[in-house]
Image (cartoon, rainbow, N blue to C red):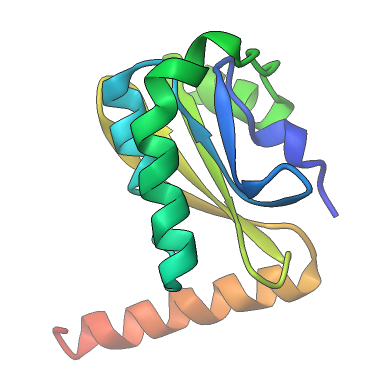
Length: 139
């Protein structure tokens, strides 16, 4: 499995639902970046939805106490390829086999799925095949 730290940019993060059970690492450096980051996390349960909205509301008060992460190897590679600094929020798939990265630079640039193991790679290949079938059928 790849080290999750390789996916972080040089930013302040908040971890939901908790640091001991991380699901998402959301960049919260300022209100615009935080608003974009929170779009990555779409919880289903009422409890998780309440947590998301509560954390977003108290963010201005806790932001000064958050520490910046170090830039990870994968993000450094992407920054070199795109020749621009990137902001990366990280979503860990429920079965811990892949991560979804939300990349920002003056707005959301897009999303990248990265497999963490063989199972994650198989899932991403299946998603690509499903996308191609739907595209052929003009869905």
